[in-house]
Image (tube, rainbow, N blue to C red; front, side, top):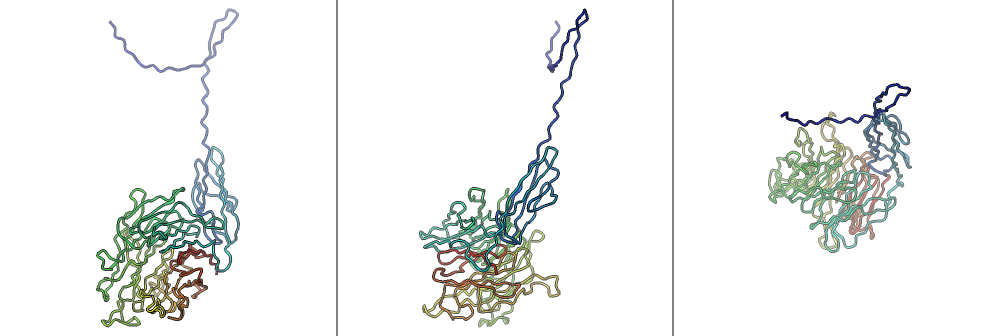
Length: 511
């Protein structure tokens, strides 16, 4: 018997027209093949966005655009010319107004268009409150941080119930509105930073934490389980530096660790920790012991440069100080600058020392966005009152502003302005990221005459390095007590925020 085998035979559907002949003719058929529908080219899409919806005059907004299925793009409105199918560019205006950006892109599937609007605001001349003060009755330990365009403000505090938390506010036309829910912590927040785009926050509450805005709420993105005191975040939000001024063994030697963020690994160490390297000894020991290195620190925009203060460091040449210990030492304080090169942190130039005995130089530090300008000031640790009437020696030191000029004949760090009077010391200090404005505060009102004023409502000086002088001040009063406890500013220094006894004030500064 023959064995039958099954096979799969493809089936074809054939459409045909059968026609019958007449008049005794034979029948026949014609097969007409189906006509395939040609594929249609996909339509292009265009996405267009701004880093900020509002900026001030001469402040930058980043325009970012991307497309699909497009081959050419043309800009119109507030910008013009041919554009690539993806990219970004900066925009700023010397005039206030509403600016519409339009991008029209064409591909084989047609044309698509997108637009977005930027509001450019003119700040009033002078120093003016921006919105109503944020009042927090019964609060303490109020700290502030501001993003690059000055429209996102982070405020941490301890309330009257001794609860510690952080709130973020966003500028909305003429007032500050809270953005997202409170971020609560068990311990006081000692240091707070916010990225230039206002979407990332880093702070220390016994240990470092980081949060990011997801469009709806603040979400924790990481933590570093290690006791810390200070933190700095790079402007792009990708790097944080963490200060441990008390030292690993409580000897106040101090060190700083730097971490970088990746979506896969979270925060991971970026190079080895940095520490003060000095040949000097002080009254607490040698080789940096007791220097309090990491008590102040600041990262530049992309996290490639770092300045660190060591307010108790001993001067390497104590004879340069205004006075010496009986053992010949001088705990004047110092600052050090580091660059990340060849996958390691390398010190740039020498340590920079103060010259006032116990002056706390390095208690406040700042570095510009490009890493080539630094500022530093001191803070006397013994500010207070002996008998309730006569103040101790006030916070006496000076502020310096230096530029990196290695290409010059001088080499290294050179003065960008005359240092301020030794009677002018910053309780707090903030340098704008562009390095063009510095805000420095004092606890006593009369900052030019030591022991000359019992008014402790405070004062904030506004200094212009390019003009080599103070260009204005903000004086505390009964409604603004203890102004200048902490300071922060936007990239340009045209918006500044400060905390006081139970308030936060924001000012526009056009001088």
